[in-house]
Image (cartoon, rainbow, N blue to C red; front, side, top):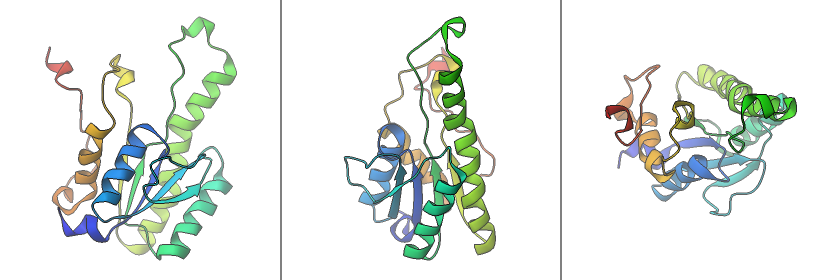
Length: 176
């Protein structure tokens, strides 16, 4: 494993479940100092829990301040907070569900990347990985642990030249 992971301070949003929890666990098991951000405490105990609501600018600011006070820097961000409701036809979806989904999945990712990105710009370094669901391509088959190593690779030195890249992980579905 690259030395980068062993000494990295990484913030993971959505760390209480799914891909976020798998990434936080993977990184923590390999020695990263992980800050597990979510609305609820992760059952896995991977990393240091910091409560955050990605729909609240103030909550994100407080979480980033907490990490900086504790660790002094942020080397990586994995923005994995997201939600999806049961498959609901658009004509049956109520506005509150739509607004919450867009809020968490788009605005929450933007705000988190913005706030952590500012820290990274001040530091002169840092790496950000955002996670999007394959559900947007009508595929709901991807195991969270299968994404963890790829996210860690994107955070590491081996992927230092990757910038603005999309890493499609669909188990070969797009080849069919």
